[in-house]
Figure 1 (tube, rainbow, N blue to C red):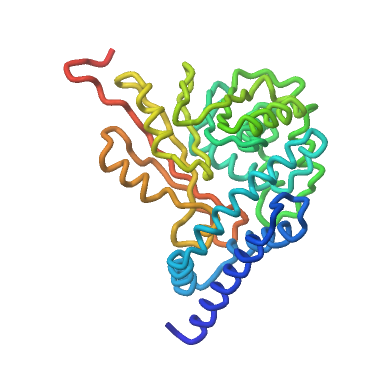
Figure 2: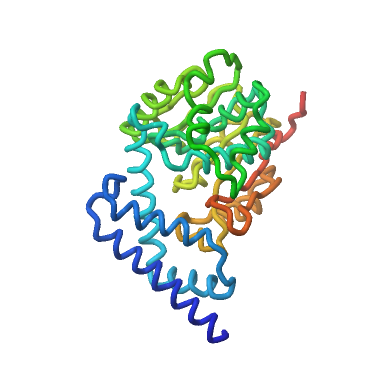
Length: 323
């Protein structure tokens, strides 16, 4: 490795390690703690910057081997939960600082999944403030109201968007005259988080389009008519969740899975555990489970998550025929 690359490697390792150490000292990981706000904001900005590939890859390996990555992911997961819990309060919902990030990803995921006004979606890992279910509904309503172009323009990377305009898009007044069969079931296993999710959804007027189920995704009884399943990044038992859904399908039935991950070769992998290897292993051993597409954030994008799209068609039982 060249000398300047080695210097970048050392800088990367030092920054991430110091961030882990600072967060580990905090007893309060909520947005009430200014140290947490400062460190996490800087970390998110840092991992989405363009870095030398070789230095970054070497840093990821070193941080993983030293245990820093595992510690940091755990701290970030706890902080993200506290962030959503804090902003799930009715008087704070519209002040959530990452509305535009969620909308950008939801627009892409809606396209990947081919969602329509008639879609019925399950989102596993909704949390106390289920922004992805919210944003999936926003995208459908914007299409119905002819506002997709304006929303896309407002959310374009590098665009100096007006936060007040974004708030108006998700405010309850926007939905008053939107009648649609579009439905999202937000699955959350923590009772406290599920209760707060219902309060937030009611405040925004989404209760007719988004329901909340308090259950572990690995034990979810899949409602009839739902055929698109999102698995959030923070869901730790992705394999069990996917297998549970698969087990409830009828022979010949086909569904779509959108599984959030992070590029394992990118510094974004410091925030979440990549699902790439798991999905590839499942594809190799589960008949009917096939890869369709993958979305990766562009270099310099503010988005963290990649998204893998898989189709699963349950094989026909031996001797059975399709109707």
